[in-house]
Structure formats: structure tokens, C-alpha cells
Length: 536
Image (cartoon, rainbow, N blue to C red; front, side, top):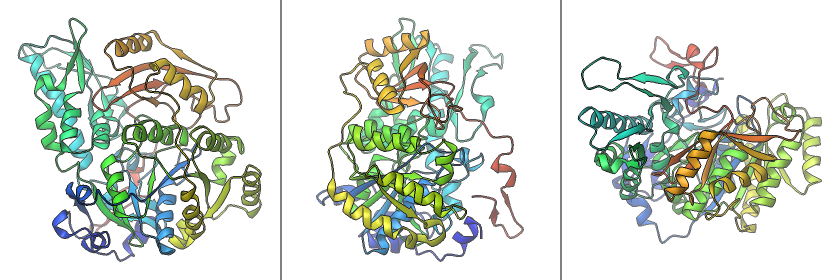
């Protein structure tokens, strides 16, 4: 059976019953049908005096183009913990429509380990990403309207981009204002995908509605004739943007096919954004269960590094254990064990965290390959667990669940890769050399100028969010094994003053992806009974 058929043949519990297991009353739920709900922002306050549960971060080795199954493993672990009698919950990101209609497909797990209702979650869900898109584009229209009616703030350069939650390379660079109407000023513009919007990052890093509004006010949208920044608050835009986001800031509650609660909220990519679900969702989950399983996007050099150096730095959170997802195919794709060894070394010896490897088992994996991987990891004193969640559900993750229960009690102190007081170039250098294994960092003239501007504005203390390919430790997607010395090339640097970090664009990475030659959209359809087909 396909993933969608497995999901449809599984009877779900009403979401109010799932909430009741977490001691959440219906008064604190906003129902979106029978199987989806938003949790009120008051739930965290009501439970703030409870001790936090244990936080388990799921990351991965460098992936192949179709991914290695981090979400599948995350769901399996949560279900596995429940199988052994533990009170567990998931805290995951929301899927973007870009991958759903592109090459990777949806992000709700697979086989017998899925979050549901999978079609709803993969498509419009509760409308959070649409709200983010609207808030982003409202700000863009307010900027252009201000310029149209006289440009009182003296915009010389607009830096704010529009967004849409689809892969559309044609929108990377566009010309706007071409109607020829009097007073309309044509200019070069462009789109990012919605999950790379600063609004998405702000929603995911905001602590409450008031903090959300303050962060929106602090967005830099352009520069004036004196090269001074212009902020969203100067356009009186943040109030209306907050109104659009007032429901989106509330976490979404769903369930796994085995009825384990799952909070699914926020969805920034990790290659071009910071790759973590919302702070509100994670903190709420930690108050509602004894074990919280969360994930960070792509390989550990991207999602996990940003989870630790950005999200943990800003919130004081720290994972009690880290799971590195691997597959036999990915190990072979990257030329052997060296790739996963580097990820283990980064997390265990540089960040100082407890690590276990989850081998996501595929039906065609040979026992010989599995045993060789196990022996290689044992030689380095690293635990391996063979996870068969896709085929067996939570039953296939009992081994890793038991190992994690022991591992989380051996918590170590998190070490960041750089200090707040380091300058921007030093921060980039430390991530590039310590985490990626680069020899040095090269900069374009534009990047050097922008770093200088950011530091003169007083934002040099912010963390860096490096946007680069997910397919290599380097910034070259084709350099899979990284055996030769390589440098990281910084093409541009973008200040995200509202979100509170600096985006560093490395190599050829784009904040608006494109579709593959044969996108998944070509196989998605609706049948004569009104049922969706083709989503995976």
C-alpha cells in the first residue's frame, strides 16, 4: 500500500481525545474538523511551573536528493517511546508546498509511521504558511504604496522581497511597476519561497504575540538616501501583520497513526533558513510530556548547527540526546563512512552532546552492509540502532527508544561554535572550518560591504545562518566526498534584524528553489470519489 492508503486505512482518534491525554481541555483547543486543532497560547502559561521533559533532537548525515527519513525516524521514536510506556510527544515542522509538488514530496513520515491527517498537513493544514505569505506580501505592498505616495522615508533601496510557498525559479529576479501609470516607479524585485521569509523565522523564534509584533517592527525593509536602515515600524505595518498572524502563532495539534500526540508548527527550510520548528511549540511540548522528539532539517551541518547555534542560544534550550539518521544508500552515495563520522565528531566532540545513530532500514539493505556499519561505529564507541519504523511502526523503534531513555540521563553541557562577541567573519569562519571542514572562507566584494554595514549598524553580535547546499559539507553540491581541501565562498550577506540573525549566502544557493524536470505535481490528482491521489 502507498503511504496515503496506509494513512486512510488507519482509524484516528478525535483530536479532543488526543488533547485530553495531555491534560488539555476543549476550552484550550480551536478545532479544525475532527482531527486537527490549534492549542491556545495560554497552555504554556498554565503549565510553566511543571518541569521540562527530555528533549531529543533528530538530525541526519548529509542526505541524498530524496532525503534519509528524519521525519519518519522522529515519528518512529515517539511511537517507540510510547510502546515502552513512556509519555512522549512530537514537535515537528509544517511541510512546505514547494517540496510537496517538487521532488522530495511531503513531510509527514511514511509507511506505518506517519502524522495524520497526512493530506491536510501536507497541503493547506490550518493555513499558517498562507498567513505568513500574506503578512510578508502585505509589508511589500505597504512599502511600494509608501513610495507611490511621495516616499516620505526617502527609500533609495528596497531590500524586502515578496514570497510564495511554491518552487518557481522564474520569480527569483523580476521587474515590478511596469504598468506605466503615473508615479509608479519600476524597480528590480524578486521572490523567496515563503518558508525562507523572515516572517517565518520570526514566527518560529517569537515567544508570544507581543514578542512577535516587536520582532516584526524591527524588520529592516530598505535603506534611505543617507544609507540608513528603514524599519517596518516606520511604515506602521507591524500591527496589521500581527493581525494576520494571530492564529498562525498558535501551535497545531495532530497525531501519529499510533495516536501519539504531535505538535506541528512552523516550517523554515534548513538549507536556506534556520530549519527548526517554533520555539512556542517546543516549549509547550516540553511541559506536556516526559519525552519530546523534534527534528532539524537536512544534514547536521545545516539543521542541527542552526538548532544549536541559533535556537538554543536564543532560548536556553538544549537537547538531552541527538539522533543522527543514516541509511545504507546515503553512506554509499557519499563514498563510505567518513561523512557520518564527521557529523558524529561535530555533535559529540565539538558541540559536546550525547549521540546515537539510527539506521533507517530499507527492504533491500543487506545484513552484510548493516553489520559492517555497526562494527565501524562500535569501533568509535558510538551506539547504533536499526530502526524499522516504516515497516513495523513503533514496534520497529523499541530498541532505539530504550537506548534513548538511558542516553538522555547522561546529559552534557552544550558548547556553541562561536561567541556572540565574535565578529561576523569570525563566526562564519568557525562554522565553516569546525563544522564543514573547510580550509578558508572567500568573500565577494558585495558580501564584504554588507558585513561592514551590518557591523556599523550594531548587529555584529547576531548569530549567523549559513545558507548552502544540503548535499555536501562544502558549498558545491557535486563535491560529495570532500576529500580535497575546499573553501566556502560567501556570495552575499543579508541582515534579518527582526528574526535576530544574519543570513550568509554561500555558493550557488537560492532562496527560491525550482521544480525538477518531472515534478511530483504531475502525478498528484483527485479521483472520481473526490479522494486525493499521488501525494507521498
